[in-house]
Image (cartoon, rainbow, N blue to C red; front, side, top):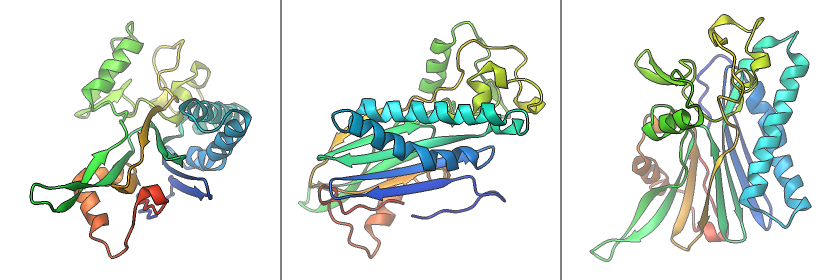
Length: 266
């Protein structure tokens, strides 16, 4: 794992939990402060374990339930601290999670982080190359598909996504459409004074503007799957998927196959 601190206060967290039957990895890209990413780092994996043990093992529903529960827990924390620490309502985190279990890879994402797979493929010359395969879908208003989703979810709000400073933003404030935290855009009770004016909307809202529910992809691992790169948008702003895969592939460490749980997380 590697972390580059972009702000005076480190807002990001990462997590790796590995056992004989499964592996969990999480990348939590905080914004507005460190509280949400720290909270997710403490609670999300614990909630996944809890719901897995209560049910019949790992599933997309278990992961989604854990995301939503962790978000509700953090919003409860915001409510308890609202009067003394109102700015916690504007703190959030993009969350990217991967779970390897029983030969399957579950990818859950809420935000604009990304996971890329390095996979061996045969070339026409009977040589092998490691190709980049993007496994997650991102939730950033810069993407037309995300803007269209927001418009469909909020058909009565013509200002649900608008350009500001040459960048598309949700309500002119934030670029991501999904996250954990960001209580001020999920519950109208937090979108008022004493929250800073730059976060307050001119009109109230009845349903959450941002979602905590992740998009989930399930990938069956094969012997050709070599490694995974989990990273926040800070990496992908500077490297293409293939450039990142080439860096890992050409490193001195022999990563091996994902089916044997020898993995590389960056």
